[in-house]
Image (cartoon, rainbow, N blue to C red):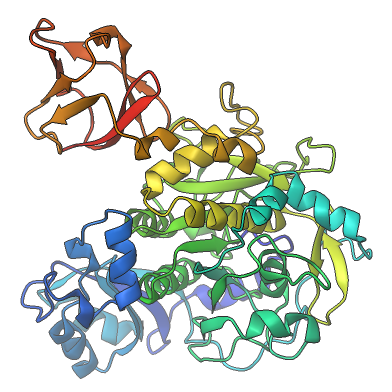
Length: 534
């Protein structure tokens, strides 16, 4: 994981050796969803009304991956004596406990595609004492004044966003972390606690999340803090709080915990996911990832983060604190294409040396955006106002900004919101591997480049969605010529347009058969229309 303060405990490696009769945790992946009673035409059977409404608002269609796993497959596993812990819609499988004999029987089932070892032993029992096995090399428990609190918001224009009336009202933010100690008992969290709509501990498979670790509490305070102690980046949002990280150990089961939590957040209708977790190194070194794996398509957690984004959720992940380490690079899931990877800067808006570097291994700009991650003001589990360092603390600032932008532009899709946020970066025209697109600013978003989507355009596009490889543009303004048009993908990159016919009767035809399927903006001057290429 890439919390600010992980201590790897090599002693747990001794438990990674499976013996016959030793129960371990596995992922069991199914070949299909054939025979399931669930249907995409009846999403209310497996998604909340809020989740369905979010998809409609963000122009997202349901996919087969959204369907629950086949219940009959789960029943057959249980008949073998397998203890099924969680089911995953998106990965089409389950997390389960099994011994060697059970695993042999599982692999023989006709509907099982594969199994994956996730970690030794069964679900951990007991309550982890706060900070008992960890220390924070970046922590700086110095009392912070109101000027510092205001600075971490104003650096990205959140003070202006709040003044415009966007403080997260109506937004539901899911936080995946290691624990939320003090949130249910500390006075400074009382206003936030009343807005917690769901919580679960996926590590210990229980409801309790409040007696474990304080890192999630810090993150929550940066987003949801009240004005009397610390004004958060989105102080009027509602929250889903999930524990997915087991601090004393590091195994891939924690990635799968995250996947299950993300699916629960999706089902609940979350608008935003914030995660300060990042993976590349494990207690079992055979599980380690390489930099080549940081391509957004390899790790289970990055695949799930991308699926969450495609389901209409804006995902913000800390880029990592590995800038000074041998690894240096971003960690999963911040490598996913449509996940905002948040790096850290100091009060002078210079990159913090520990902030992980990009790009993704396939060459995309990462990190995406930067925010204050050195001496960031937060509330400790005891209620004291402190400061802390790490991309874990810049990410919730970006999360609050993203929630406010979603609130301000309710009709835009997630790719369009991501484009707005990236375009607002101080280095958007010249991004690099250290700062990405730079420091975002709400004031640049407010007067941004794609607000014209809501205006009446001077041209129309047929067909849309584009299924033939060609788009026909009918102009209502004869002054618009073919060279005026630009096709922009959702990463802000220009894509070549190939004209195939003369400008006749105010109509232009472009060949777009070379364009990958996806959402694009066709622009001419200040006008723009969304198009979908299939």
